[in-house]
Image (cartoon, rainbow, N blue to C red):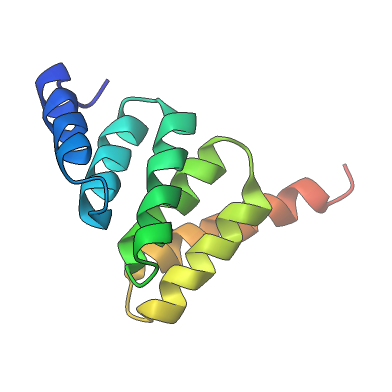
Amino acid sequence: ENSSPEALALLERAVQAQPGLAEAHHNLGVVLRLSGRLPEARSEFETALRLDARHPRTHEQLAFALASLGRLREAERYFALALELDPSDSVAREGLDELRRVVQSRQRPK
């Protein structure tokens, strides 16, 4: 949807060339997420975090992927982790706030 097949192929080659590079997995995950390939994006973000858990943007991107997959509690946890690593991360803050609003609205009696 939002990414070209060329960009995806380039990032897949980067991951194959350097499978131990967290940034390569993160970047591939972003393109997969924007393409709507959420399970694959989730896998790439999880791999990136196994390689290096200190990057708040990867936690944030994984949270967005999980939220899109309907895994709201897991998404909440990853937004919170992103904010622990970078308290000034306004995107993670907004994502977490929105997610909590959605969860609260689902818990209210109709």
